[in-house]
Length: 413
Image (cartoon, rainbow, N blue to C red):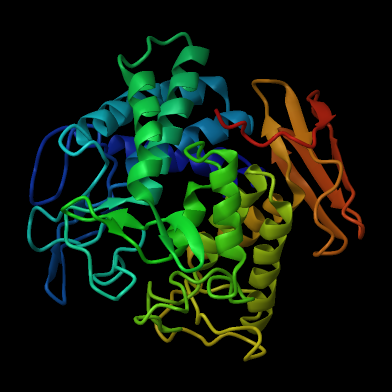
């Protein structure tokens, strides 16, 4: 999310994670060969029935996101030698991803220790994965967005290895295409408002049919075709999901919705920014801008210092969202969210290996005039100006070709 300010932070983070990449099977810590850890702390954490070891691997999405982050850093101008040094870790990530799905066909999780996290996506609270009628899903659980992350990691990882002359991961391309072909018939569900992707499949392979912000994370991964992306964009824009201050984690129509539920109705800035970025990648920049505006409205209420999460109050009901009593403030991904959201408004795509900076001639004018100055592409400067009518202008002191391209979003197969 902070790559437009330079690649050093991303690369040092990736190196730190790679040093702790799993190399054995350990049910207590959830470690597996190739798996990227969830968290590191100085000692054991014991809290409300949890007992988490100092180095804990209970996450189903970090391994794919490791690959995606390195690929994005490469596009933003990371030094080739630093990228190449992390490719062995990428290969182990991809091997883990393929092996992890052998049993069920999906990337899924279950707390094998009995004292770890019941849910191991970013929504890791015990009640975060629920059916539309309020029933909680039972593990093993296959989250929808995690399948998108895995598909994107397979595509991006293969490109990285090829670009650096590395051997391909055997069977990876076929695995990714199979995942994509199977996703739609298994995950898509319908209600009175229409079709949408379920948040997950439960232990019996039944779609967990609540409307959640997770569907926004599928955008831009390549897992959805154009028509499916349009359906998701419309679902995110509906007033039960877009509070006017950002994206609710759970539809307001749910019987379990609460504006101050941790993952059941609150708004998380990073979640909103990821959805905005996906909307922009798919070409829905008006939707991306609407979500970005929501973050700005919320930021005003919190002295421009966004907390970890806040209430899913509706803009039509209140002038500012409720504070979540125990939210971290500051928190890293909340602090990074505004930049990611504003880049989504601009619609700028940097690809240093390809030698290009692509941007739309015009973006949404909902935001008004906006300048993003002092961004970085490798060692060069990048400035973006958006006029009040939405016209986009990009300037840089790099030798990259600046290209106006109205249809630069990922082309679905």
